[in-house]
Image (tube, rainbow over all chains, first blue to last red; front, side, top):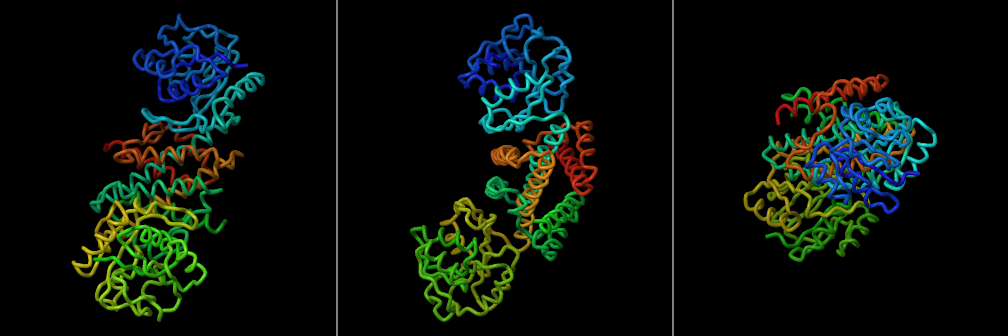
Length: 260
Length: 260
């Protein structure tokens, strides 16, 4: 059973995790380890736990050591820290395999599926958590732990995590790039980004309230309104890449609409 | 000065407009005209105004006759209705020119930039309104009227409206198609759409809080992380169109990130 946790890291994910763990009655955030003294103290203060930057001071009494550091730092850091071999060692990096924690017999992954960023408060209970563990018993313990933090807990091996990460890139990074392209078009018409915000908000809300986003699709591509599409394409003659994206996504909308 | 309004139509935009006008102290929604008796009565009841489906019963005393009907119906309906020549006649169709209201000397457009749909309540004060009018005086009157309904009122001729509409298609229809593609990827990994919803919400909220969406971009394309991108592309080998979209948008993110 996981009760005592040492959190390692001081980034945005670590900050969010620290607060979620600290505010959970059943859990104790024993210590925050972070090499960055300033950020480490900041995150530790937010979650009312002691901080250390000295590997030798790492608390040896925790059930779980949670490495919430950048994808590239996981492997090296795992090898440097004197984590007891009896504890579960888990990282939060979606694109890093279980193998990166090779020195430890109880290896695990807890991948939170959300875009964490500085200064933005996220209700951790809404964040889907994807778990993997080297031992069946550890997976059970980790699942019970994760369910204390979030309403959505799933198992995911590397292949599944990769697919989830891809879906996230599409729904987060790619969507954000379309927002940016639309904003640039408005700026070219001397209109502020403000104009777009109500539509961004409503589009997201409407999709969230639907059983599948395709069920609430609208617009010229869905209707097969070629005249409007031709008019739009003419506006994009000086933006060949955006024009190609327009044609491809319009085609996808049209094909999706025939299937539902 | 516009004080008395007759609203023509009973679609989602008309319903939202009717309620916005009816709830504004300075305005009177004199009558709702709609050929669809059932919907007409419904919308009229929601905004506490009389309804008619008979052109001969059209109230002749309004300052503004607002045609909120489908793009294709505007021109024909405008010619059939006995609207007094002294009133302003405006339509709400973003893709229809002022000319469609040819029979009337006081022609105008009030284009609300938002995706309205059945059963979804929208705070009309947040909806950007784009205005055009055949006469300078009418534009002034229409602007004062629109400012009673919304915090965001702008002028827009046909060219500007077309560009705004294109931006809307990108930020609404195209974004929604990316949500749908991401959902399908999750379904293929036996995961529910629920998994994606917190990310959709946070991506929209974060962009809305930014000065420009490009300023809050993250992810492998922004970082130039080719290894992760190659892994994603390999997952899309059986989806050539989505793969092409992945490559094009990733390229755009990378180029945008160099500019800011």
